[in-house]
Image 1: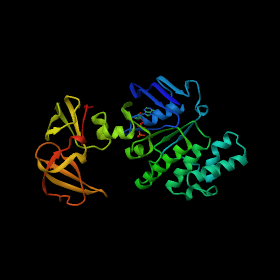
Image 2 (image 1 turned 120 degrees about the vertical axis):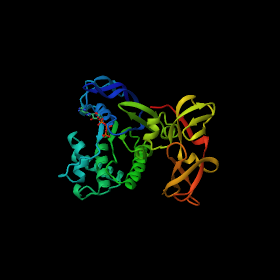
Image 3 (image 1 turned 90 degrees about the vertical axis):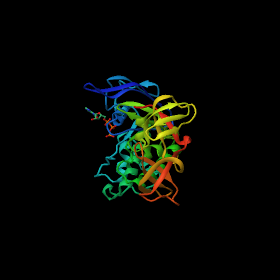
Image 4 (image 1 turned 45 degrees about the vertical axis):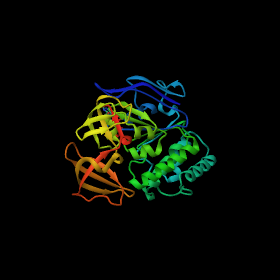
Length: 338
Ligand SMILES: Nc1ncnc2c1ncn2[C@@H]1O[C@H](COP(=O)(O)OP(=O)(O)OP(=O)(O)O)[C@@H](O)[C@H]1O
């Protein structure tokens, strides 16, 4: 459906999108994830035809888009601030793309009603946009983007403005909606939870380049670099010298899975892999955070940086308690620095 081939955008000397190769298959939902300024929005603008390439190609359905203006590309774009027309009602907003394409009033009204059902706002045609909550406005913006049946739907921080609870719920709803409709989606977000809930495939960007691409599970289980690991929120990452199945780290020896890369690397220990008790690294508990199903502890070890540990609600030690920490190799990943 979509192929980016060495796509590069330079502003002055700086490549904001740097030789990106990326494919999106029909019916696939791909989420581009990355910190602010990593080039995500520019990438979407390139595909939409709103930003010219300095080098490389954009192909849609196999056809080079270099000479195709934005309105002829058949892509829908939904921005983070949803940009609804405040003076049109909900129906007028959803119908906008249909009316400009010359769809007749009767079939237009039918389509609008169907789309509002689809996004969970049945019968909302005559409501004023200003009377809607943030989440409802988001749904209207989505219905408007879906209305012309774009072959590729692009979402820029689709749930960015909403509070966390609503964002998670809408991400799950969107995912099921897209799979029912068979929509091909390229979304960008800086929120890993949103990306993981929405996507078949996640693409992590770092300074205009792809740092890692894979299924949410692959990326979560095996971050490709220290950058990706930290971006996903993993804090337990230290320099390490790996030899066979042990790594020398500032925390002392850490067991690593067989087949791990050897030599100077970084070691990531997932919080669930920091086990309390037994013969291990002496630590003091400095913080305890309740997470609903478990407790996250911050430990200050006798050597090395702070450690984050996850443990059961029952019997979780209090701040100030002295504990020992061991490491479960199943939760340890050796990653390259960078
Ligand atoms: N027209 C422009 N001229 C110069 N620099 C630009 C232009 N557009 C974007 N940039 C720069 O390119 C970089 C990438 O911007 P982009 O908006 O693609 O990042 P992003 O990953 O989408 O960030 P955010 O999550 O904050 O929206 C930023 O440093 C930005 O300042």
